[in-house]
Structure formats: structure tokens, C-alpha cells
Length: 243
Image (cartoon, rainbow, N blue to C red; front, side, top):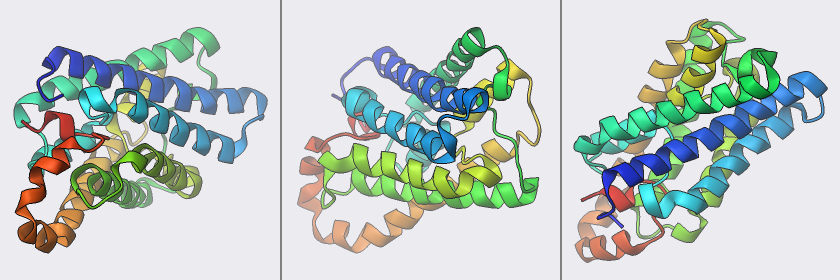
């Protein structure tokens, strides 16, 4: 799996991020237009699309779909730095393509699902840090620890996205993902406090990854032989690309 060419792995990242923006932001736009989904429906859409795309392409690219996840994994030495630029470019390209698709279908309804702080930039920044830290904590647990149930990784990560969106969405938009915010912002030209959606997720993902790394350290030190079996688990996020 780790031997797959970078272009294929980056392609999977682009496809997954495209699906995330098209379905998730598309749900926001449809709800703005019809009111049929409600806040709960939008949150569940984001969680479900993440779940199905992890299950679909996790074995190809690791299914990051998020520059903050990719950078945090690289900082924690779970992903090679040499692959980071290709992954981030692919994720941003997928997000922009998704936003263009929504615009073709719905014009500029709901600012194409762009994230804008509803409770002030500082509060939204703090919320994005917290939400992304929780998400990255779960991702790191199911993706890097051999003791976690790897086959449930897609469900665990998708459920975390939905949970974060359910309670954090009304305030910050619960982006947790710079690419997800950048695509709709670029296409709809909605840049209100856009920096929040880069700084917050990047900080939060780093905190989440290192927090779980600190918690698992004693077990890893005691069980060095588990390294190879860890690589054979379901690669929900980055495992396919460690080498």
C-alpha cells in the first residue's frame, strides 16, 4: 500500500475532499434553499460522507482529506514530509472543484457553504481548535495504535465529524479543515475571518495528535514488536504512506 505512486495517493485525496465539499457544503446549500435537512441533517451529511470516503479510499491514500490532518501527522512523524505538498495541493484542488460543482448546480445560494464565524472570530478560533483537537485525537487513535479497532475507524471518525458539527456548527461552522473552508470561500468570494479556518484547525490537529501520542507512549515502549502488525491494520488515515 505504501508503495503506491504519490500521484495516485494524491488523486485519492482530491477525490475524497471533492466528495466532502460537494456533499457537506451541498447539504448546507440545499438546506438554505429548502429547509428540508435542518442542522442535524447537515451535520450527519458531513459525518456520513467522511465515513464512506474513508472506507472507499483509506487503503489508497490514508484518507486525510484535510491539510491540518496531513501536517499534524507529519509533525508527529506518522507521515513523510516529502508527501505533504502533494497531499495539501490535492486536497485544496478537490475542495475548490467541489465548490465549483455546487455553484454550477445552485448558483451562490448560502455562500456555497462557506464558513463564517457566528459568535465572533476569537470564539470561533477557540472552537475550531477544540473541535479539531478532538477529531485529530480520534484519528490518531484509530490510525496509529495497534490496540484500537481499526476496522471501525471510518465509523469512529465520521461520527466524530458529525458530533463536532452538531454542537459547534452554529457558532464557527465546525470546519476543522482548511481545504473545506477555502474551496467555498474562493468560489463565493466569502473571506470573513477566513484566517480562523486555517489557524484553528492547524493548531487543534497538532494538539490532538501529540496528546494521543503522549497517552500511548508507555504502551508503545513496552510493545515494540507491534510496529509491523500496526502497519497491517485498516489504514484509515495515513498508515499507507508512512514509508
